[in-house]
Length: 142
Image (cartoon, one colour):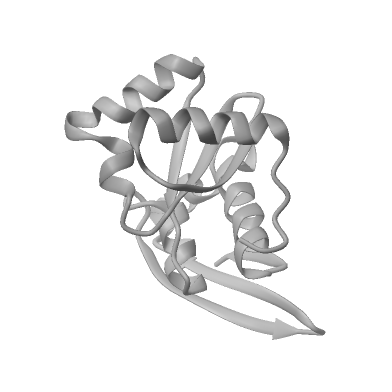
């Protein structure tokens, strides 16, 4: 997590989430309408809890929707984790052009709208987290 700056507000959200779930949070992004937690690899079950009880308690405690992403050392696996299991990803390739790393993400045509998200919210999350954790400059849907 070197190079990632976490604000005091984000630290508070991390501490609260970890207290409730016992899952290790390695990054947190607070937006006006959601909180995104990047969970240590292998801790997703703890974060969600039996029948979703941990995540539901956390949502109630902070009164905001929470999105969880499981960390992965490998950029392609991490990007797949950001999208979650709802979107059918055909292929992800990381290319370098003019010194910039670009993730080219190929999704099933039926899932393209979902991958982009309302007002581009989902693809923006992918771009932000891929940059923060793997130094990827851009993500492009194909």
